[in-house]
Image (cartoon, rainbow, N blue to C red):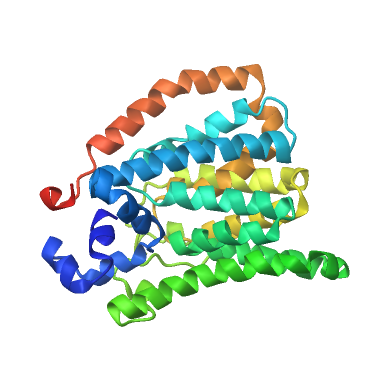
Length: 316
C-alpha cells in the first residue's frame, strides 16, 4: 500500500521501488493508498499507513457503538462493539497497512445512513467502500435485491438507487483510474494475484489459487457460525441489513482463499448484532476476557513473523 501510494500505480515509478510486476498492485484498489498519500507529507508513507488505520479504527469504534445503541437499540452496546474491534484479524488490520478497516468503516456508515433514509449522505461512504475494496459493490447488489423484494413500496424506497449507483460507481472509478495509470481498464482482474470467486466452498479445493493447504478446518467454524446465525437470527435485523448480511455471506462462501478470518470481517458486526443476547451473557464476557491474552499473543506473533521486502528508506 505504501508503494501504491508513492507511485500512484505508475509502472515506471513502481519499478524504481521494487521489481514486482506493477499489475500486482492493481489487486489493491486506490482508496486506502490515496489516504496514505494525503497524510504522507506529515507522517511519511509507512507511518502514514498506521495513522490512517488508527484514525479509521477510532471512527469505526464510534460507528459500531452508534450502530448497536442508536440504530438497533441493543442494551450494553459497549459489550458488542469492543469484541468486534478485538476480533483477532480486525486487531491486526487496524495495526498494520491494511485496507479492511477503511472498507468496514465505509460499509458500516453507508448501511447506517441507508437505514436512516439519508440516501444522499450514504453515497459518499458507499462510493468509497468499493473504491477501497471490490466487495463494496455488494452494497449495491443488496439494494437491488431489497427493492425487488419490496417492489410494492418502490416509490417510497426509490432514492435507495443513489447509494446503489454510488457503490457501482466506486469500482468503475477504480477501473477508469487503472486505465489511465496502467493502460488497462481490466487491470484489477488481470492482476497476477487476483482472488478467484464464484464457486461455493472453493476454499476446500486444495489446488486452487490462494488456498494451497489441506489443514483448513478452521474455515468450517467460520461458515458454521455464519450459517447458524443467519438462518436463526437474521430477522432480528432490519430487512435491508439482513439482506446485506446474506449477500456478503454468500460472496464469502465463494472466495477461493485461505484467509477466511480476514474476508469475513465485514460480516462480523452483523453476526455479533444478531447474537447480542449471547454476547451479553456474563459467562461470554468472562470467556472473552480470558481469551484476550491469547488474542494479543496471536497478533504479536502474526505481525512479528510477517516479512515483506520493502524499500524502507524510500518510503519513510
